[in-house]
Length: 263
Image 1: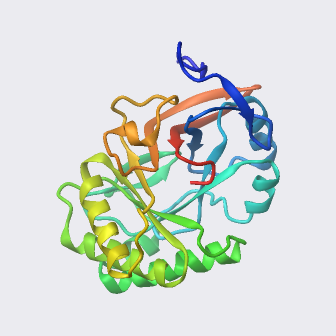
Image 2 (image 1 turned 120 degrees about the horizontal axis):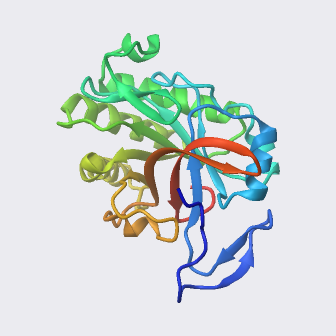
């Protein structure tokens, strides 16, 4: 697999640098990655210096998350100049998959965390989990207005009880003065964004909500999220779950682009 990240022929030329010294291109999206388990600060420092990536998915402890959370390392990663995209893996539809391997979703028949399996999808549970997400983000030092993405794994069909959960989660995060984002697969993206936007509008919030779309079709690190086929997307993920190595440090990752360094 090629790891070249140079600008396309005829594209914008490097014209600026980030605070960490990475070259920036005018109008370029910000490349980032996410992986389930926190790999350690030493390896993260190596990757910031040698990889093309400028931000990383930051997984909070959550009901359907089995990995090693990133919580507790916010300031250290900021000091290394990483941008952060905060993720919370909430309850999932019964026909969805959950994150139980490094960046890989596996069938829901596999043993899930107790918090994932003991509660049912409902508006009431969405509110509980929203408070959980905000409380953990706050304890980790994230200020009000920080975006927290609710990870909603692919579900076909998209069930009403999941929609009720998502809407309640978004509403409660807004009430707590954080910014609720959604991470969703392309097959559910339109429905998820419509529900998310409806909750924002009902709360009198005219902003376009942050949306992290998962779509492998046509992905390139040189493209913007709006080129994903979903004009409302602010982050675009290519779920490759592939190894990349920089300065002899290998991570298994999904690649992303975002409209800003702290999605």
